Length: 146
Image 1 (tube, rainbow, N blue to C red):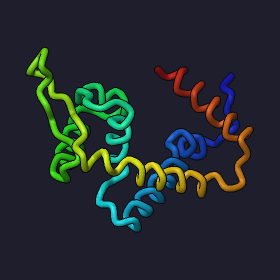
Image 2 (cartoon, one colour; image 1 turned 90 degrees about the vertical axis):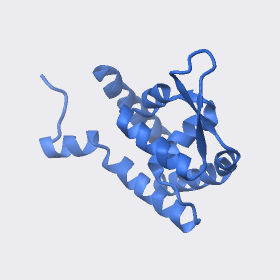
Image 3 (tube, one colour; image 1 turned 135 degrees about the horizontal axis):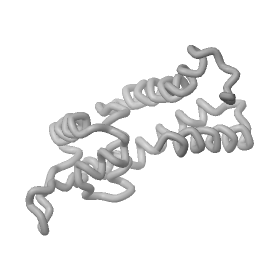
């Protein structure tokens, strides 16, 4: 017997991450208010490059859960903004690595601060215990589907 007490539409809303969409919209608004001309999607690519610079496009697809055309479009736009550059991998020139520029590196501190402020705002009135339950449930859902 299924273990859900949701109506189908309610369950879809939970799984479809209505809350995540609201957080992304607020973060986008906070970027705009700070005068930053990047999208949340572009920021997610930068975030992974700040953790480990010079990743292949395929690795960025894997880490951001995006398909190749989406990553290509995001990288193209980040290149136009001079935040990243494509560099051919020395061992295999067929593979492009996406590397941060100095301008891309300089955005890290400000955007991480804005992201933290956004999350703090989103989590007002939510206890640490509740956060741990949500993380655990979503991890289980993810594990069940991969």
